[in-house]
Image: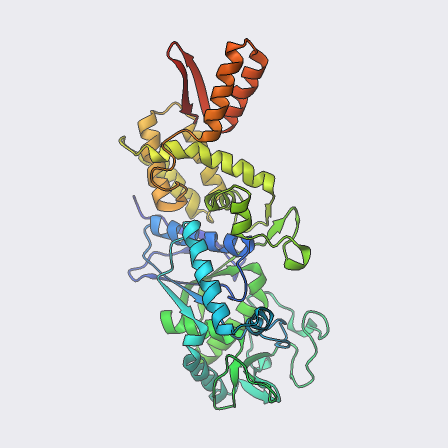
Length: 459
C-alpha cells in the first residue's frame, strides 16, 4: 500500500490540517482513564477511537509511538482544584486503599481493551510512578516565575502566560468564579490551577509524597505534561482526548508545558465528542452509566460496540441505544463467516486505496464502512471480497470473533431454519416466509434444494 497523508481536523486551527510523514516515529499521546471506577461506554468510545487513530496512521504508512497515561492520583472532583481526590473517594467508599482501587480498575480496564480488540499503546505510564518528574517540572516553572503558593497548594499563574486559553478559544477575562470555576479567595485569577496540593494537616492520605513545598500530591494537569514529555520529548506530533478535556485540562497542559520548555507543546490536536445514552447525558446520577459488562449481560459482544462506534464520526456526538447496538450486532454478524473463511483470493487494490483515502480524510470511518458494504454487495467475486475485507479488517476494523467461533451457522439461525422447514412441511407458507425474513435479517440466505435447505451468509 502507498503512503497517504492524513488530513485531519486540528482543534488548534479549527480546520483540517495535513499530518506530514516523517522519518522519525509520529509522537502521539492520549489522555487515559482516571482509574477510580469501572470504565463506562463513554470511556470505551474513547478507547476505540484511540485504537482507530493508531491503526489508521499505521495503515497510511506512518510509524507511530503512542503513549497513554493512567491517572491514579491527583484528579480532584472540581475543575477549581477543590474537593476530594477521586481515587481517595473511591477508596473510602469501598473501604480499601487507593492503591488497591487503582490495581483493580487497571486490570479490569485492560481486560476490556482486549475484549474490544484495542491494541495496547507503545507505552503506558502511571502517575504514581512519576512523581519525581512532576516535582522537577513544577520546580522548573517556579524558577521561571510562573508559580505562587497558597495555604492549600502551589498554583500556576495563568496571567503570566500570554496565550493562555488560545487552544480552547477561552475568554479569560469573561471567566467568573461561582460558575464552572468555583470560588477560591487565595487564587489570583479564576483560571489559575494547582500544580501541587498539600495534604490535610489533620489526616494522612493513602497517596502523598514529600516535596520542596511540603507533603502532598500532584495536581491532575501536571501529570500529563510530565509523563508525555518524559516519554516523547518537549513537542508532541499529535495529542488526543475527549472534547470535555479541552478546557481546562488540555488548556492547562499547554500553558505549563510551554512555560517550562519555551517550545511548542503539541503540533496537532484531535478531540472527539461525547457519548449520549438515548439522547441524554451519560452519568451515574442519571442511572445510565453503562459498562461493557452491561453490554455482555444483554447478550452482545464487546465487538458489537466497537462496530457501533465506527458508525458515528468522532467529531459528532454518538447516541447509544440498545436498538442501535442490536442493529450493529446484526450487521457485524453478517461479516463473520466471510472473515472466518480466510482469504484465498486477491484483494482489490483500487478499493483498498479508496478506503485508505476515507481514513486520510478526517478519519471518516462511517464513510469507510458504507463504501465497504457497497463493495461487498457488488458483483465482485467472493474470493476477492474475502481478501479485500481481510486486509481492511486486519489493518483497522478488527471485528472478527475468535478463531473457530464463527465457522458454523449460529444456533439462532439454525433454529429459524428448522422452524421454517416444519412450516413448509405443514404448508404454512406465511410462517415460512416470516422465518425466511428473520434468517435474512440475521445476515444469512436460505436456498431450498432437493437435498434440503442450504444456508449461506448474505453479503
